[in-house]
Image (cartoon, rainbow, N blue to C red; front, side):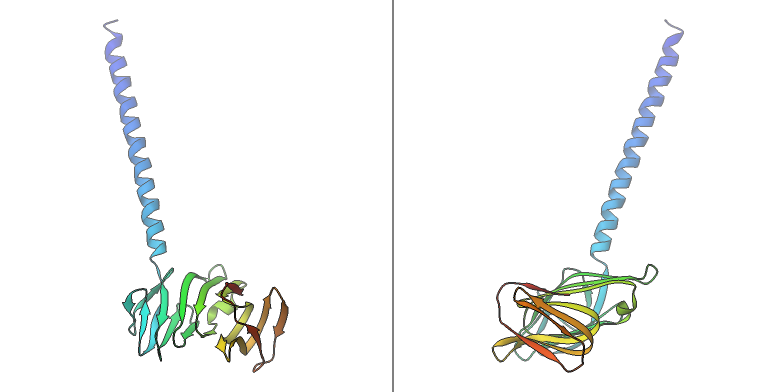
Length: 204
């Protein structure tokens, strides 16, 4: 018994060290994952390139050069204008009294993948696609009050006008759809008007 005790003690010490090492490694991995997740969420996806009159990013006054991140809410006041340029060169312009949330932006040229998800709940917007439109796997979605637009390498304007919600194609192709039907816009300068609705639809 006396001869085996030192071996047993050594074995227990070795096991305890292994457990401590395992716990430490697991803790480090969890902290690394949390750090990576927070870093990804806070990654800059664009910047403000033009401001006129009252405009905000969340509760902060917008200024040229300010960073734009996912989940930022962009807002303008009366006579306000705000222009944001994303990392791929896509440009989003807000007219007066507008509100847009940048829900998601992905630009990965190595994998030829790009995605934009915006929620435009108020006012008029203009969107011009940058290099993202060259990606093989791409998806551009804008939630609006009245319509769903399927955007393909496009520049378009959308917003309330004359008591309706209008969509005007400036370049490319846009498919406009809601519960009442669908319209394909493929000739620049053509558009469509829809009844104003308070519930969200989708612009794709």
